[in-house]
Length: 460
View 1: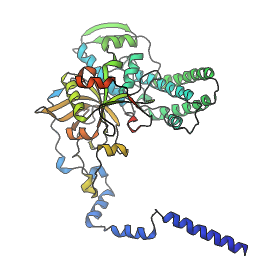
View 2: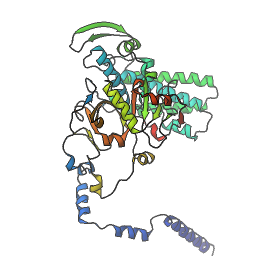
View 3: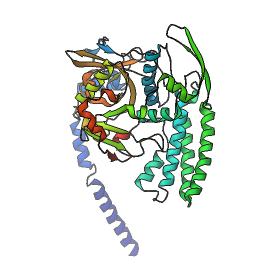
View 4: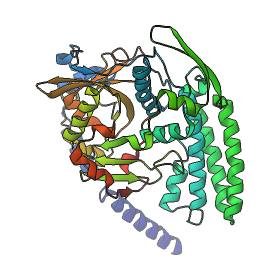
């Protein structure tokens, strides 16, 4: 009798469980209706056959848009040489240094030239390690499942970043020519080594969280950073503190040979106050325009600046972008580069692909909805160098990319103005290009956003 009661009880529980699963789940009746909705038309069969052997992006390529975009631009900044970040997430650094490089080339009549990305990246990784370890010390009394602590442990280090990182790093450490600290294999392939550093930082974080004394925690952090420095030297080489460099002009004529420190080299060939001379602008329709925002922990140096930006409508950002290009200045620009990118032609055009016709569906989200649902966000930084104006209105734009000379259109990407509207996010411009009516907004107290804000995503 007792066994029968137990069996009956289990049967009842199973029935309850089955009901709970079908309440909101896919029941047998629902599955029948779903199956009936699939008609398996001739068009469906043709698409199924094609998808069985061919990439969806190849099948969706719009045959009516095969012609190359006109490559004439009414206004273009002069630049020399295409850089290549290779298999690394350092687009933000290449772009920022390319902005400074364009100025140096223009003002000093230089030939093709690059600043060392490895030099700046070495200190970026050291500073980010310190930022993480110090943040762990600051939050060590919070529970490990606190959202801030959880976010820190989820994001101890990355090879991505923003222009704020470039300005803070260069202002503190200066720059050197590429040949003084050249690229290494790991610099061009950052992910595997970065993964090891993240593991080391996380285990260091556990030790720091157990530390009761703030003084002891700082002593421990110093030793941890010494180990990180050693590992960075193994991967990238030790950064120079002094070097000699011969300067040749654009015609190949010898100009001078001097000894420099990284700071003196920067002062001679760039010399800008990066931390106060540039303004980051954002087009984020999810947030109120004409307000400034900053994101907590969105910086590269613990004693550096959080990413601070002024949110503006697209027409005001375009106004500033056009002024900068006309003024002869390349600008830091970021966007959602993977959307409608035709890699072979080097174009970003909403008409490049027709997924709606291929799949028989409608994509209805606007820019705000794509951001809100994480369907779109800033993913890549490039250098804005050209605009084509017709009757004073932009029809297309061009950016210098950091994917090598053979990628895209002569190492560049051309975007239609319609694509710009949908997938452009950030622009960094010199303060002198900001219209008078916008300057007061730069002085307002910024709204602070948490580190996990959707627009935090660093460019890679």
